[in-house]
Image 1 (tube, helix red, strand yellow):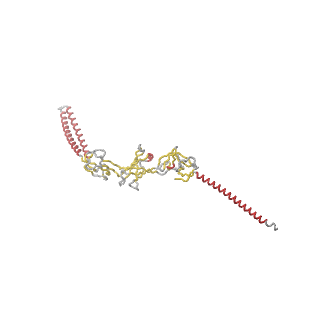
Image 2: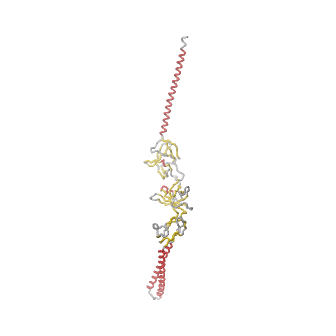
Image 3: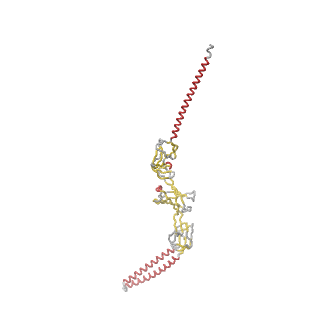
Length: 387
């Protein structure tokens, strides 16, 4: 028995070695399988991420009809409701002036007086000529009556009597002509008083005492300028695209640089009903009450028209449009998230947005800032929608 005892420990040692080796082998196999599986999973994840990254990311906006009205801002020119230059109707020298710039005047108020010595002499001469003509007429009438009585007794011939009657008629016509000449010169005499044609304010005085006055509307002959500023006219040139929307009764707000922070309500009273062939614009007149004389004629006005919305058209941001050889296009995204290019017909341009007359439907998703390389059928990812 002493020879068989050492075999047991050797047998246990071999068993342990085999067991540990098996465990190590299993662990190694598990690690190898886990590593391979991890690599496969990582590779698949990388493939998915790469595929997702390869799909273009886009932002879209929904095409819709605007229910809000639009605001059209245009420059306007302010004019007095009535404004007239005052010219002389007779010749002479300025004797005196009674009103200077800024003076409020009423209709018929004396602005200036003109000395007219030549017209005065002409009037005196015409009155003397009239007196002579009336005397000749009276004598001719007396002679005509006498010859009518002689003709009744056959004391004179009918021819002589008719000559006297004709002479009396001629003398009367000459007297009437002289009377009209006197009336004309009296009118010229009355024009030596320069008066205001309507209530208003004197905005210019271009003459002084002793200045030579020439009748008529000649360059440099304007004496005064009078303006009625209780109401103002504002003229605006409306572009052709908005001409049909601008009608009498359309309300507007006016802003003036000399009145910061204030707005004035005005109303369109009339339009030219015709476009200027050179500018392709429609002249529009608005009227503004100015009881406090806060706004001056000649001022620059910023006119804000409130136009009604057009329910027949769509609005899109201007940065959705592609300029292609085929014309204007937009890139839309279908239900499968593929790009579909659509040709559009543009209406009015509002700067940041445009009007689309046809080519898209309400609810279409339109890509904002599409790249020039975008084509039909491209798969995209939508990052968000802009309202």
